[in-house]
Length: 255
Image (cartoon, rainbow, N blue to C red; front, side):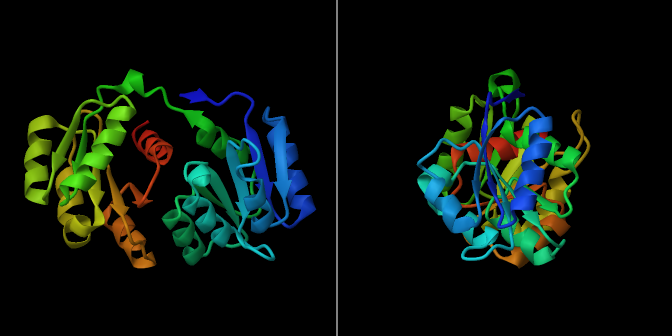
C-alpha cells in the first residue's frame, strides 16, 4: 500500500472544538494540511476550488447535515471518489446504513479515539499498487452484459487482467469451481433473490480463506444493505461508482 504524500484533509463540523481536536490528533499523526468548514454547504463550496484528498464530516450540522452533504458530494464528478469518514454522535443503524449507501469510507461514533481516527485516515489515504496484485482473480456477476463490461473495464484499468464474467448464480458457481476466484462483485438484482445461495456457495475454504462478495446496486435501501450484510456480503457499493471508489473497496476487502 502506498499513501498519498502531503494530503489535504477537509474537516467538516459545526463545532470549532471538535475540528481543533481532529486537527490536533491528525497533526500528531503526521498530517499537516487542512481545510475547514462549519457545515455541508460550506464544504461543498470548497470542493472543486481546492485539491482535497480526504474529508472528515460530522452528521449533525446546521444548514446541511453530513448525510445530505455526502449525497450531493457523490453526485458531483469531482467528489465521486474522494474518501469520506463520517462521524456520528450515536451508533444509529439508520445513520450507518445511509452513510454506507453513499459510499462513506468509514463511519465512526463520537467520542472518536485519536488512534482510531489516525488509523482510518491512513487506510483511506492509501493508494494500492495493484500491479503487485495483478494475480487476483475477480468474478463479475451481473445479468446485463453492458453492466458487466463497465465493471470489467474498470478492473482492467486497475491492472487486474484475470477478470471473469457470469450472468447467473449457477454459471458463477461453475466459474468459481474452475477458476478459484478471489473476489465476486455481484449485482443486487441477482443477489437479492439468491444472496444466501451465492454467499453460501462462494464463501467456502480455499487457499486464501473465504471468497468475499461485494454487492452493487443502482437503487439502495436500508433493507438492501442490512440483508446483504446478514447474508454475509463483505461490502456494498451504490451505482454509479467511480474507479477510485471501486479500487478502495477491492483493496480494503482483499488486503
